[in-house]
Image (tube, rainbow, N blue to C red; front, side):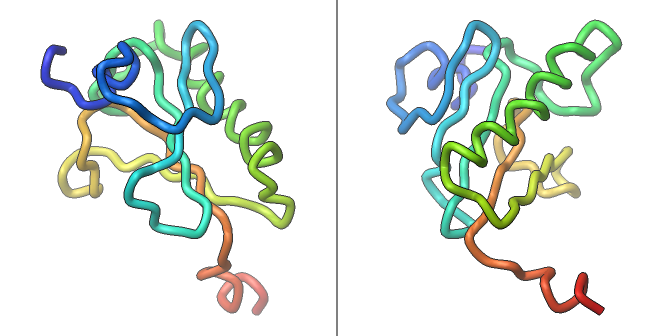
Length: 115
């Protein structure tokens, strides 16, 4: 994808504030955070959305989710965090490259969950 924002970040054409990187995934701080701490975890290979994933992506999807916990610990999310994957326009997806949001810093669901 030549016009994909996240592919350009993976290629180093657009800078980001990296949190984690390996051969398959990249994590970086969101430039429009929705919480005091907000980063994104993306696959380095272009996959436009979760609903486009196939069985061949199973290991990669697992790695994206499993990396959320070490990233949360690295960023000091000691009291918990949320992971969100928006899928498609109705699901709130704005960049069409699969990404996992990892957010922490406030507890908007706290009162609901404590009942």
